[in-house]
Length: 112
Image 1 (spheres, rainbow, N blue to C red):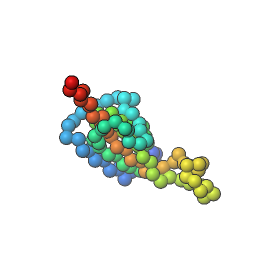
Image 2: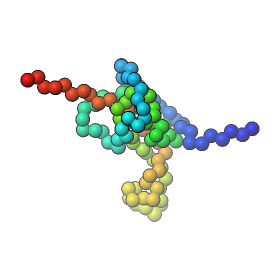
Image 3: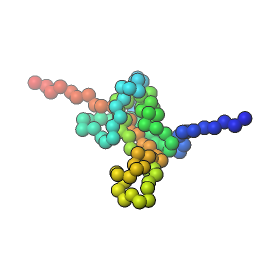
Image 4: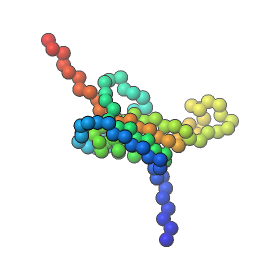
């Protein structure tokens, strides 16, 4: 019998920083960000792997109660004739994904 595995994450490195355990959320409740938000937040975990997807990283963040996950993708294919990565036909490919799970800090109302 031959078992084929596809789209399996490899080279996985997950680190959890939160001292508090937060209740899990539905993945749809976790924002996907491409850069750090302007509002205050704390980092609760980092996820890194090869062959993983944004959806999978979002699911991991939801399981630990993150409000959002900041996604970075690295590597990927490229066209030899293309000089600018942003306009390359392969610009949406990547070989490594990093996700930083965050929780927004609660704003305290000002004392009057």
